[in-house]
View 1 (cartoon, rainbow, N blue to C red):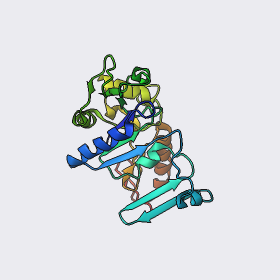
View 2: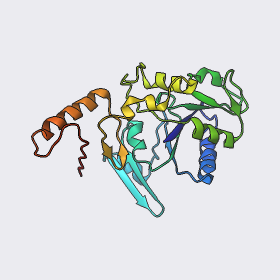
View 3: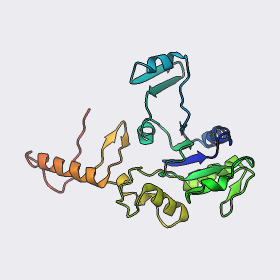
View 4: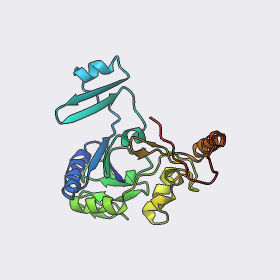
Amino acid sequence: MRAVALVGWKKSGKTTLAVALAQELSRRGLRVGAVKHSHHGLDVPGSDTAQLAEVCSVVAGAAPGQSVVWWGAERSPHDLVSLLDAQVLLVEGGKEWGWLPRILVAPGRGEDPAALVTGRELGVFGPAPVAGLAATQDVAVVADWVLERGFALAGLDCGACGKDSCAALAQAIVAGFARPEDCVAQAPAVRVRCGGRDLALGPFVERLVQATLRGLLSELKGYVPGQPVRIEME
């Protein structure tokens, strides 16, 4: 999946860019998913959803043309991504999420966007340039950046890639010194799929699952060590 975070100061135009970028990518025939991260909450006071959420741990809604799931607490972003049937993921906000490359939204006013630079930036969108970064005011150019260089890491900070964190690996990828495939947790020897998607396994969990399954399978007639095994569970 191609993915990118759109980051900037409050009211910098992140939502405007996210909508325009989603429209551009959709015109190119791609399925686009979006995740919005906010420090100010996403509830709608007084709505039926808000009233149900006060007493339920999770609320689902269905209506003609749309379906939603509303949790009463913040979930891991990877829990949300696993629900999205998309080829491209746009994250609005998520400054702290180090497993994504970023587009800085710089409207040319207010706070200095350079203060947000982490080394994971693909470029800057807006009239305020940032030294050392490519800049554009063309949404089509941003779409090209996302498709050519966007990625999403496992977000486990497991260190299996040799880096201290996913953010460090993401920075190396953006700089051209590493590849998304270097995220070992996303290419494990043991694959666990849920809802049609692979779940990210850290090295410890992978070894634990692998050892447990091998121990159980060794008691079954017909099991041949070294041969691929497929287990399905509902």
